[in-house]
Amino acid sequence: MQNRPVRSVLYMPASNERALAKAEILPADALILDLEDAIAVSQKDNARALLKAKLAKKPYGQKLVIIRVNSRCSDWYDDDLSMAVAAKADVILVPKINNALDVSDILHDINALNASKKIQLWVMIETPMALINLYEIAALGPVSRLGGLVLGTNDLAKEMNIPLPRAEQPDRIGFLTYFSNCVLAARAYGLVVLDGVFNDFNNAAGLEFEAQQAKHLGFDGKTLIHPKQIDKVNDVFAASAEELAMAQKIIDAFALPENADLGAITIDGKMVERLHADMAKAMLGKAKFYA
Image (cartoon, rainbow, N blue to C red; front, side, top):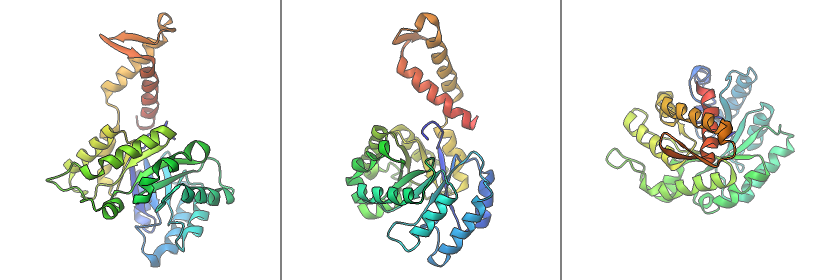
């Protein structure tokens, strides 16, 4: 999963038939088709049925299809999970987890449904207990289908008493320690990690600030709440033409016979190590998805 881009990951309410149809042509790398927060209690069953019918048509092409189910302690979890497995979603996203035992229980539930091995589990990091137990949760990745962490910044802001970003204070300073720990845990255990949403979808400058910050912190991408946010986030997280050209130059240089046994070479007056060639290959691999 880390070999494909997840720059822009758009939440879409599963109860909105027009939104689900519009998502077919949106340039998001991934869709979170939401059965949880975006759906009123009275609409939970209808939303599940609508999403099941939609996904039966395989409408989203190359986009990563993520279904966010309701939490394991809810009345809708069992039916949500069964539908998501039957629909062969790429990813099942589960909210409100607190520790590794929660995740292990969910993994057991998915396996008990004879889910395809291709289906990954991602979990929301949106509670203080999840932050405390972050490394034990992430450590399940290499030995299970756990493949990603998704920051729930709105819930964390509430639980941690952290003010949400404002125009006069956009830096998200209260979150930075938690962000870095999530990225560190994800990198240590080979998981995807996504930044939370930016609520002010008419504020392009604020969105760009958060996306740039997320990129420099090491996130793979950012979750979004509105289609108008997609292009900006894609631009921020995508490699530039210059970066892609240099990546190819590095790969070509290490492919030369005279450099075959060298761990480091000089390109344009700068030292380049073989690890940079690996990074270049990963960059070009992701670029193929959005070229």
